[in-house]
Image (cartoon, rainbow, N blue to C red; front, side):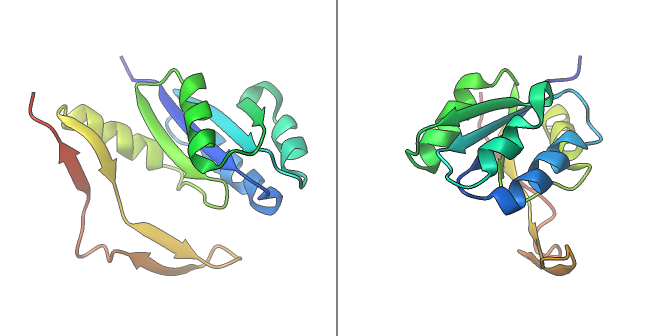
Amino acid sequence: MKPLVSIIITSYNYGKFIKTAIDSALNQSYKKIEIIVVDDGSTDDSPEIIKSYGNKIISVLKNNQGQSSAINAGFGKSSGSIICLLDSDDFFELDKIQKNVNIYENFPNVYWCYHPLTYVDNNNHMLCVYPPRQLIKISLISVKK
């Protein structure tokens, strides 16, 4: 049985970016997902953009208490056995969640993984990858049972 993946997107006054972040989560190749978008008291148009997604996402609109509070609110609403965090000014590549699920299925002792970030400009043209891919294929942190 494929695991449910919770994608938690946190936002504060990132109305100009939030749609791209949410759309990247909705368009994942891996479909057993729930998307939780937590707005941390934005004063721009972020809450309206978030509400426009209706039941495609789980929206949490709360008073401003900082990103840690927003992440905790997202965790409180999540049901997935895998949690992925996405800042609202970033976006996921289309197969990111599938790659994460593959890691957890192939390495059962892994409890946390991360990967290089691709930096892009305002037109989504790649600027650089950090750390460089030749230095890191994927980093896994595991714990012995």
